[in-house]
Length: 145
Image 1 (cartoon, rainbow, N blue to C red):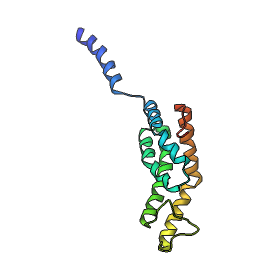
Image 2: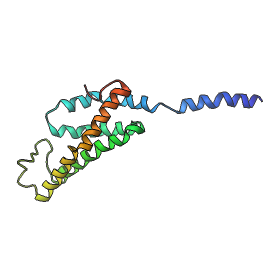
Image 3: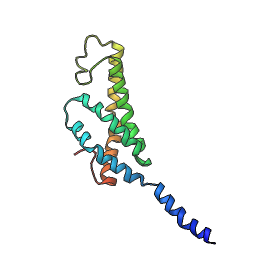
Image 4: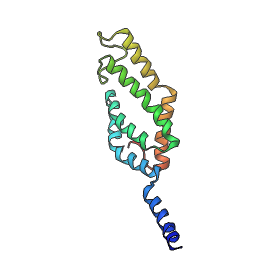
């Protein structure tokens, strides 16, 4: 009987020590990345956007299930654009769709433009709005100030 009583006391305590609140972990990650994301949001250099991808990946990893798909919808098009620019050997900070560098092939230019359209698509923009609103609603803080 004593053994059963001791187990009844230890099991809940052990389980409580092993689990954590996903929303709390996510909100902590939002706060940790807020300063860097604010710098990205304030920058006029489009290449700086790719600097946020590591933070976005970390936030997606910590995100509660209800917002994880939205994070994926934000990150995947950005990664595709980053890859298209890298494949073309183009600096994202200086690339202009109106005046692409002369050494960028038509195929690379089309890949960059397709990836850029996906970044600006309604799906991606809506997903970004959802993750921003989720941070406000659940964490009480914006992704950036």
